[in-house]
Length: 489
Image (cartoon, rainbow, N blue to C red; front, side):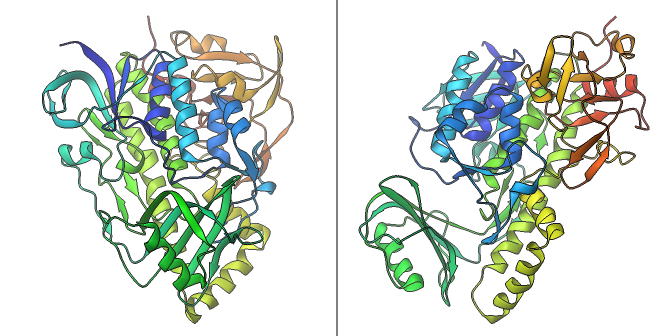
């Protein structure tokens, strides 16, 4: 039985991004999906600043920007957030349907030598000391070093592995449809509240609209089938009109159930994206969180599979990303509560709106929704340790270059502004790039932190987060060993 280094279940954004990360590192990877082909359904419709930065770090962003539309569309339970004040090259939401995101990611995967194997339903999993055997369609068996479940909220991989998925039940039903309208509104309507719930009507592309209605009068089972007539009836009840909806491309529903896997790893099986966490899609955080799961996990899994790093490195995936998902669950529960109809929620929204309209309030909630404030638990001795590195304009021996361009190869970087650290990389030059540069400024602007003095050096992980700087309590050789394995003789 031929072995593959990593099998990925699910050809959605998370699985595809993870596959791209692994292929970039030269890992043999295969993506499996139970569907016969890719569909056109799109639950998500926007990419946040940190996700755009992640794509930029890999040199993948241009085609996404070409097909998307920049918008100031960040919000907290429908209350606008202003991303434009944040220190990033992408201070906006890129409106881009999930189906387009998936096709662009799959095209990039093909360029890297990967592909999706359709019509491949996982029906069994068996682990041993040397690897994992995955049964496909009841009979075919594939062997791999690791399996990553990126197969959605009803994840087969999670269930077969026996990982619990505790959380809270749905308290509302939201119905959505991608339709044509014979009586469209004059402009975009976003989460307009009424005494029955709230509704939205907006156009992603010319000729058709996405309509959504939050209906607090019923709770549908996740397995229930909805029709255009169901969406029409709910919209009339909440909005007083159906805007003449017809010719549906897609109708669906979702609730505000929130669940988080009690662990992200069981032996050689890991979970990412919706397989690890589901929540109300308030603030548009779902697809973005999954993409960032993939980028956190990809380089770690590649180092372990290649034999450069110990298997314990994979434990940092859960310790770093599970708290992020937990925070998303908590803030989306808060947003669902804030959106409910009635005078008590009205009063609360007035208070929260007043807070968001302040610079500090917008920064606190805005950088959280945009995922620009993440600080992984690497250390507290310096505010930049564990945070995403700013995209500095650097002067090097080869000319001026953006820092994120140096991350296109998916390799860690030791950024050296004093030119004194080359000897410290002895034993790691096969894994870490040493870049000598002129510090462009004496102060850096960091979202959720503010301006801070520039550092003399930075050890930057492939995911763009700072793993070491001179003010760390850990010395450089220890940091290199912790994150990228022991030195080579």
